[in-house]
Image (cartoon, rainbow over all chains, first blue to last red; front, side, top):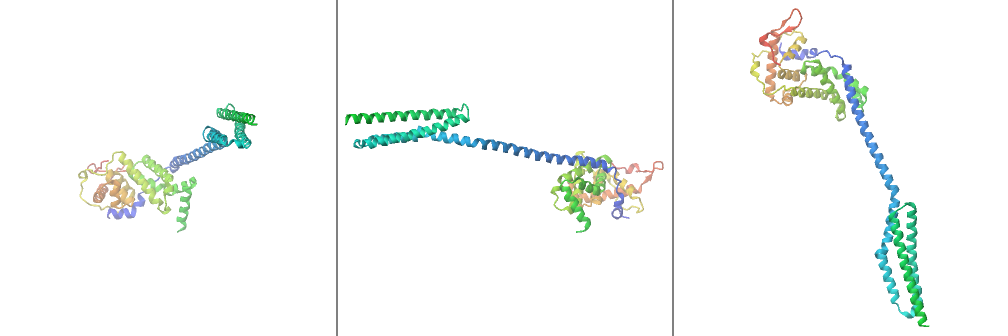
Length: 174
Length: 196
């Protein structure tokens, strides 16, 4: 008989007896099981990362209103340094140049303008005091308090100067 | 779909989810055939067991990538074959560029049909590894010579020629079969011995 034919008929009978399959299975189960543990570890790592990110997010969110407040106070108080102070000086100069015959009105207008400016910085000052109370030894708040205080003093000086000017004019021109 | 294949599909789906009971059931269904494939390549129990374990470990780890559940058996056998060939290559067993003149024999592939299949099996184990591998892949693995040539990195004509030579060597061995009366095992005549 040709070998090819023999193989076709008998190849299944040529199989060897399989030894202890249970022992092989135990090793397989252990290795495949460790893959599951790896997957669990991966999920745990992802969960921990999410928790940490969530914690950071909450911390930022908690601090955000305070940060926004700081920025708005800073933004507001930075105005006198530039635009607001400039606008203040321009307005004051303009009002001073107006014709004298309208003096009583002018006095009212100028003083009224100065009062408004003063009140603005008083408000900013009060806000900064609140911030300082919330955050102890906060250099930022202290700086704002200092600046707003300075502006208020400057405005008071202007008020005093304008008031005296009008008094002198009134006494020289009865 | 038959009831049997439907059940097999369910088991494989459970395996994909990591169900260890399903994995054990699948293992029991295929371990015999996988062990025999490995045993044919290595001729020793320890190596065959290692290959069986590595095959199933890889299969269960990668079972999620299997799209057609019907192809599971063939896929598993391919893993076994590839791992076996890979291991043989690591052991510096070469499949290409062998000196085939050392195995010259007159071609004759006829054998007595009443020979015990176990004896034929043992004779196959005695073949040189390059020839034994082709017999294993073609006869027991069901692979065509084109596939064998790709696996072993030889030409298709080389695969066919070696298979012919393997059959001739086998037939020659079996013709000169002598039984050791004391041990009941067969022994090969010295001038017909194979080289591993």
